[in-house]
Image (cartoon, rainbow, N blue to C red):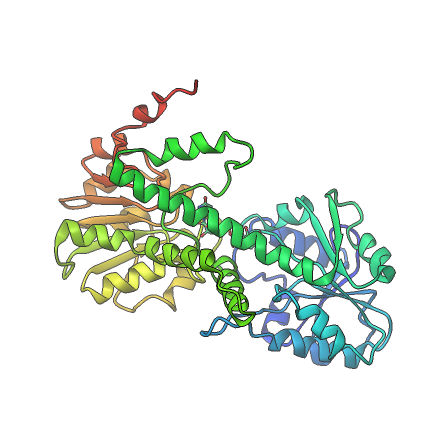
Length: 423
Ligand code: UDX
């Protein structure tokens, strides 16, 4: 809508539609409320329940339904399929169905040959690469636009959809476009698990992951992104897509060993603080632990597959007294953490009388909190596990914390890291 198109948002959930109409955006996504407000005011954006839609759907119909992964690792395509049946019933014409939902490679071709077989609707795969917390920025400045299509008939409409957005366009077949999405997420997840494995070795061999990451990132073939060691990846995409690709491989008689290791490493990373706490305290029964950060990453209130949740549940099941804080995700956390967890209103309150503190999400509100005050409010032994390597070990130790990071066993101070010159 902000780039001039007339947009109609359609959903089966009447409550959601009503909220959007009243300009209430569920969840926290920086910049999105302003955009929606402006588009609603300008009349470029409307919302309707599926039952209310009497008009034609327009030249482009974007399918953006969820594609959850089942416990068995298969992708549940029921929402996508029912959306297509609904569109087909509404729009027998020549609209271009643009699949934004992440669907397993092969799905688009199958849908074209089955659900859409007896229609003149066109189908393109147009995977979405935006990141939560940066979604608005990523929409306007994507690093690529991938379009998978069966023939070129739909292309002028898709070109018009992205008019004014500068980005390399890649045109491919439908299945390759679908694979690009999965391969991108799987590769980034692999980078994260790889650097976490190197961090584990750094701890054992006396190297410092901060320097190692920086050192390898200077090779442009490797690049610096997604080399942050820590408690691993979470969120609504990486865990689901990596599992789905692994499952897809095995149903197609390929053992994707690498991807299974990526998953195993990631599951381990989430519980690193638990292992460290066990080592420090012996039993966790009665130990007061403060968990700082619940969202799966900063700048979002999304707690789906957040590393914090696995940790909190494990701590509670071992008898720890847990308090937790997140700048935005407290409402979302309430329904998913055990009721015994105290949900604090700020980092200081969260740390009250804590014997151990775990930094799980590197929100600025947490990283830049008054750590001297936090130390004062906490209790010995003041064990501090920095699950994102976001704090300065020297400063933390000066405040009296028993500091531990991930792959930072040898980092005594920020100065230590700076002494490593590049020659
Ligand atoms: C991801 C993809 O980046 C995006 O292209 C796709 O469309 C959706 O999935 P998102 O889920 O918003 O986006 O999160 P992202 O910023 O990629 O981070 C994913 C997870 O990896 C987070 O839990 C983050 O903490 C973790 N991460 C990221 C690391 O552990 N280390 C890093 O170096 C980078």
